[in-house]
Structure formats: C-alpha cells, structure tokens
Image 1 (cartoon, helix red, strand yellow):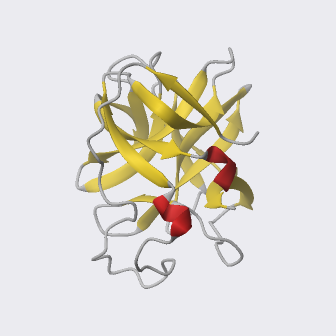
Image 2 (tube, helix red, strand yellow):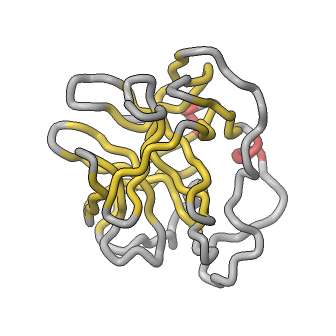
Length: 190
C-alpha cells in the first residue's frame, strides 16, 4: 500500500523539529547529510496535539478495521521517535513503542506532503540502506538515526521505527506493548 494523505482536525501550522535527525550524532554510519534537497523540501513535520491530524498528512498504515494511521514523531527521553498518530488513538493521539511499553504522547509532529513522492522498501532483519535513501525521522538519545517503518501485524499495517542499531528489525506499539518485527518496510524517497 502506498502512503496516502488525509486530513482530520484543525492543524497547528507551527513547524516541527528539523527534517533530519540529530546533526551532532556520533554515529558515522548514517546517510549523507547536507542542505535539504527538493525531495526533503517537499515534506514538513507539522505540530499537532490531542489526536488532531493536519491536512496533507501522510498515511503510513491502517488498523485492522480500516482506520488510517499517520506518520508522526515526538520527543521522548532525550530522543526524537517516529510512531503512529490518529484521532482514534486514546491517551493523546500519538503512540510509540519504548522500553517494552506503549508510550502515549499528546504533542507530536505529523509528516505532511505529497505522498506520491515516497515509497516503501522491504527489509528483513537489521536495516540495510545501501540501495535507497530512507526518510530520517528522528534519533535515539545517544544520536543513532531512526527511520519510519511499518509492518503487517494481526490484519493491520502498524507504523513504528527502525535503525541500523536495532538488531530485531523494527519496533512499534500495539496492544499496550512495544513489539518488534524482523519483516518490515522502511519509508524512502522515490
């Protein structure tokens, strides 16, 4: 399924954190950095709260009942973590998996832009970014970059995070727990 844009709720047009992860990362195995190119400039992270989803939000997944899940990120424990957002998600509208638990956050940044300029790249096990350019959506407290990922899980497409340092593939929240999947897709520029 290709990402699609949908809009719900009133947007807050405040610009989110920078499009790339932590520029001071000690990790030398990260994708090339530099000024934003035209692909990066086509997207922005728009601040949202309490389940609101701004117009042009990029849909990255879907619940098993067909409810859309949107790509978002938020600050948590010194990192900037990708996860899922939606007006139906209780406890704040944004969820990540962290430390074995599902974490609910009510202030987050939603990826907005032309979803036709994105694609999903299949992965198995540890992330391998040798043949494509993933969208860097955040970073761990220690600086390792994090990317948007999704996996098929119990009849749904769940959004989470992946990184070259995550040995079990991707991490996502589901059923009030952090879960992992070694078969997943990572979001990349076309």
